[in-house]
Image 1 (tube, rainbow, N blue to C red):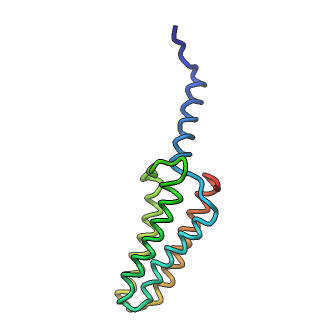
Image 2 (cartoon, rainbow, N blue to C red):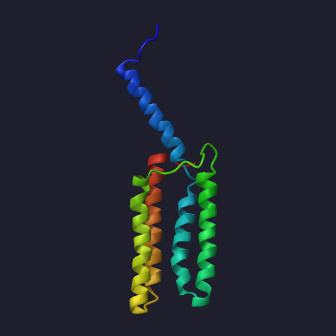
Image 3 (cartoon, rainbow, N blue to C red):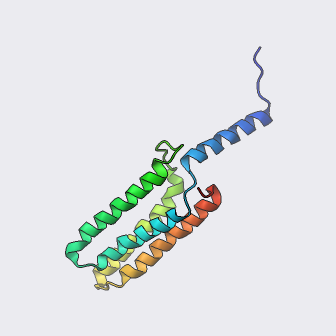
Length: 142
């Protein structure tokens, strides 16, 4: 004869399933991960201070380094099987970072003020560091 779980047992099981999903979806990162990613984000802005002929190659190099770092310490981490972050969780971060980059690019193009790339680098790096601090507070350090 099959017995049904009590409401408390069912709630506990659902809570444990959510915790297990989050453990795979949001693994803890080493403390230095967000510092390195903020440096990469700043570098993506600062390469625009180079002579125009070098911006594309430098941007590509920094982007590849950031992607490799992200893949190694997130998607290919032990116990994580290319789990995708929930869109609602990442959307505000991406909007802030891409918005900062777009605003910096637009201001630079409209005013020829190259110094805005320095401000954009600082703001974007700050966004990554702040997000990293919140992430580590919620999901822990590796």
